[in-house]
Amino acid sequence: MGKSRLILDCDPGQDDAVNLLLAFAAKDRFDILGITTVAGNAPLALTQRNARLIADLAGVADIPIHAGCDRPMARDLITAAHVHGSTGLDGVDLWEPRTPLAAQHGVHFLVDALRAAPDASVTLVPTGPLTNIAMALALAPDIASKIAHIVLMGGAMREGGNITPSAEFNFYVDPHAAERVLQCGRPITVFGLDVTHQLLCTPERLARIAAIGGPLARAVHDWLGFFNRFDSAKYGSPGAPLHDPCTMAYLLAPQLFAVKSCAIRIETVSPLTLGHSAVDFWSVTGAPANANWAYGVDAEGFFDLLLHHLERF
Ligand code: RIB
Ligand code: CA
Image 1 (spheres, protein in one colour):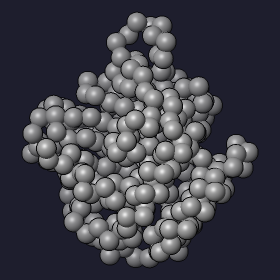
Image 2 (image 1 turned 180 degrees about the vertical axis):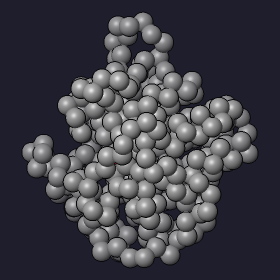
Image 3 (image 1 turned 60 degrees about the vertical axis):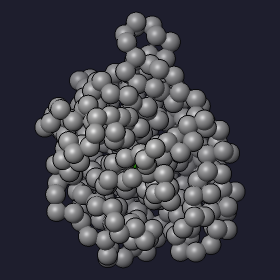
Image 4 (image 1 turned 90 degrees about the vertical axis):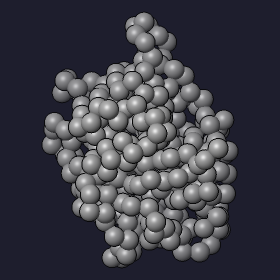
């Protein structure tokens, strides 16, 4: 059986960076068709640059990196410099990326790559606002049949919101895109704050990363050290939740996670609850399930998996 085809869509972001490195470390298992970047944690000019820096760091030169949408579908962009710093990748002294930016717009790349692929053969791994994915589906609805699975980070249920009391950041930045993707009819697995908040970057776990040694592990350690400061202070926790790497970890080791088939809808109107993910965990609406909702994880197994892959560089 051939390698699974992947396209990662991201807004690096320190946790996006770790997810990209996890994917790069598993190139023997996945055929990464390309990376698309989106405005979210930082403006697009920075998220596309950051994805290229991460490719530099990993020594990956054969995966095209595209810039996608620089704003949400129907509202003004908000970013998260308060979490990720002014560069979007604060914590490490950054450099001018050697990895080039592909010329094609990320949405057009998604359409062309999916159209060229066999039916139900490409897994999409979005870890930022879903603008690029939703725009590709709007531009070319025929590509839906080429999507095998969408494994995304976003949303919250019991955990509450992290950017408003009701909404998680990715879904809040572009709620219209989130609703359109969640209603696309293809298999979707959603990693929200309920599961990511079980995966804290504690000092012990950061020490294990540092002990790997070498410039890549040191960069990951320093990125997560910076990433820790805001959420640790906010939640009074021993580390920040490591959100985005849940997606690649699930593709590598699904047994680490507990998921449940649920109907999930996104609030796109109310100013008070915009971006809220209404997860019908107990099937009280009777609506048909449109996604798998992740609600549990083996945290030690997750970090063992992450360390094992970081050691491969
Ligand atoms: O709410 C967490 C999500 O928002 C993560 O994807 C993080 O990178 C930010 O994009
Ligand atoms: Ca992200």
